[in-house]
Amino acid sequence: MKIQHLGHVVLKVTDLERSEHFYNGILGLPICARFDEQGMKMTFFSLGDHHDLAILKVSGEDASGEQAPGLHHVAFCIGKSLDDLIEAKAHLEGAGIHPDPVDHEVTQSLYFDDPDGNNVELYVDVSDVWRKEPQRVAQIAPLAI
Image (cartoon, rainbow, N blue to C red):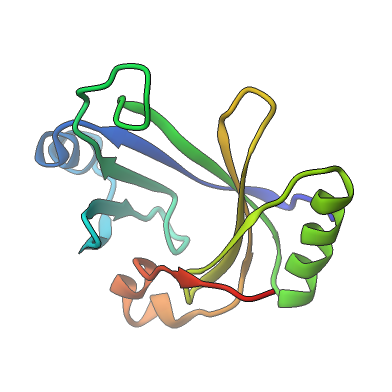
């Protein structure tokens, strides 16, 4: 397994519209997709890849828990094939880490925590469908590997 590049960062925010205005309206990051399902609201921004930054709406009520603003996860691209992901999963499991596999259609991913509880995603790019349909970036489904 080899990390090829930093893929994206997802931030937890308390006011999605305010944060969209900041990242899009002030900083100029183009919005490529939105997700509003399963009680989750997200906005995805692209600087040329399927997404480079995303923001996730949280309540902000529990300053020390899952609903606190801050980093949700950092993602690293490790390849372009399911075989690369399967190899990474075996590597992680060999180190005692049991990742959660997720199919995002555009990417296939493994999620797990670092030693301090920060969420990490390793992913492989498996589809360019986002180039014609940017909204396809916002897909979430289980991945059986």
